[in-house]
Each structure stands twice: as C-alpha cells, then as structure tokens.
Image (tube, rainbow, N blue to C red; front, side, top):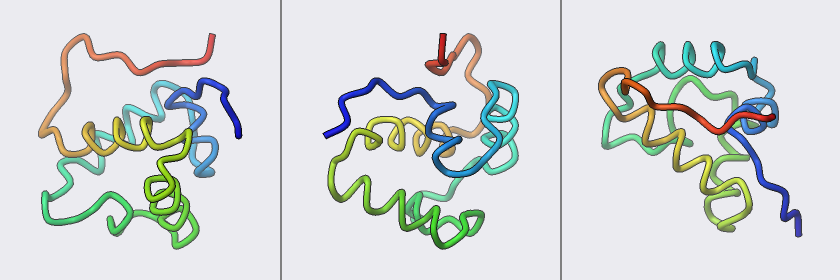
Length: 90
C-alpha cells in the first residue's frame, strides 16, 4: 500500500492534467459548479480512463480518495473561496 502523502497537484498529474497551482485553479473555475445530481466520475469533462480512476479510487477508499473528495467539493462550490489553498508539493 502506498502511504505517501499526496497533493492536489499529484492528483492532477496522476490524471494526466496540467498540475501547477494556476492550472488546478483554472480547471476548477472552468468546470464549477458541478450539479449535485452528477457524481464526480460521471462529469462530462473526464476522459474514460480518468473517470475510471476516480471511481475505483473512491470505491476502494484508496490513498487518493481524500483528495478526490476535496476536488469534488471544490467543483461543487459556486465560486472562489478566498484564502483557500490546496496542499502543494514543497
């Protein structure tokens, strides 16, 4: 089992997405708000392999699950959260 502490940038890298703080913020801004009736993995902006990864990691309550939940919550919020920072790599 991988016990490494992952960051939101690591999650984006794992998903094959640009992963700088600005990239993450831009992605969230472009795709929010995610409707409550749509699960994160069902969102139309994922490629099939990305959706599968998200679904499997959540089902397995894997190391990535907490960050996936954080991303999900961020995408459901209607706008920027002042002072909200995502964990970043040192």
